Length: 167
Image (cartoon, rainbow, N blue to C red; front, side, top):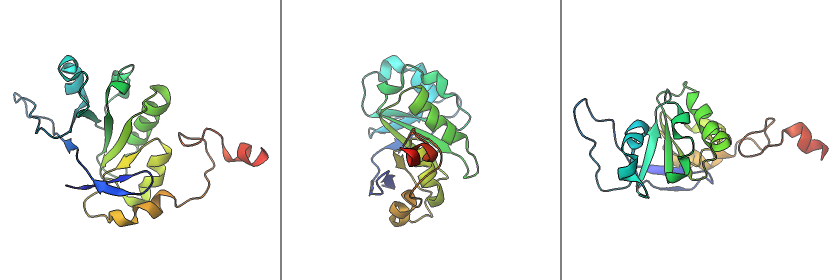
């Protein structure tokens, strides 16, 4: 099992399986382990998956999180795929899920996730991170707290630094 890093920097084995999108004409196959399935397939079979704590969804960076509006907290886990480290759309998806849609469960970054991105992902509301396979998860704790203060408001603090300094 691959490792998952939580936002406090601890490393644990990942029990969730990311189920790839089936080829055209093929059915979705679940392994029996807790599974992350493509968002559109979960929406299409929502009645079938309702109430299951072992089914979450994953979104591609081009997916519209608005499709989950009003439904997000039916899911125990939502993962956002970062197809390459330079694609920043996943950060916006994370903030939308937390701030606009009120998602309170686990939000995970998957895909091309690098150590130097972790603190920024945390500020956008991500709780857990599946690092790219060639990265050392033992360095994650230091990367999650690299900066002691941030200037902007985000999901981790809604007060910008200049307001925190005056109060």
